[in-house]
Image (cartoon, rainbow, N blue to C red; front, side):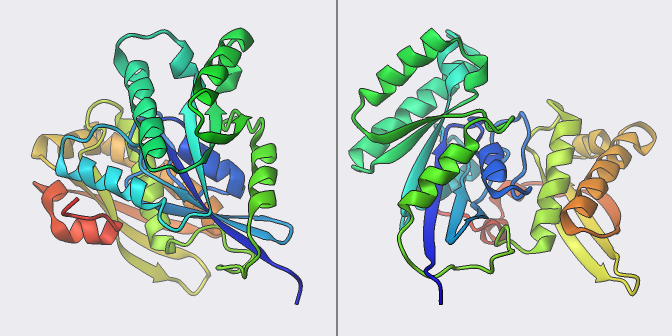
Length: 309
């Protein structure tokens, strides 16, 4: 039997640093939801990348920030739990946010959250690979200054400059991670790209499309669950999903005038599912009100989050 190498890689970073985009790029397939909204990733998503004899299990984590609600605390706890047993840690930093000079808004929060991650990694004495993302949007002098500042923390073993969105530098990062992987058997079949069931990926695809469509109207107060999955004789699949929102007013927003919003969400989700699953999909979406869903213990269990975090 040929030699095999395998590494578990935890991908950590502030909200909207580009972790999910990076994991998708490394895997070469859609395994994680991606939007411009922070906190798109809610639980641990494992993507599987292959490079010759090396299998990399990439754990895409929720963004690390200062939590306020129970759900926030559970997401942040899940992110840090990914470090347990990881062979490598990748700290993704949004370079454009750091050099924008913003004193308020999302960029300043991103910088503060990223600094807090660096401080905690240092406190835990966990060496990691620094990945500066979105470098295509940063002038070179500012990028070099930022790099020097972060390297001065004495925490990082390597620095990689990438643009996850357009793929620049992603191959170099994949090569580095593969070179560092310890010898050991693969944990998944060679052709598998993620460890979540298809119905979970289907729900994530629909949630991504809903977040993109609904923008600021209800960015986080919705969840999607795949209620039924029926295999049909012609090789297609019929999928029934429910979008749960917290209030009746949100249900009306999700449906939209004459059902236009939910129709558009369904069409985009169906197309991406057909691409992901390689077959025809019949998708049926329903919107229901479920008040207080973010306090339901069973939901946390289904997402793999700690209710008591």
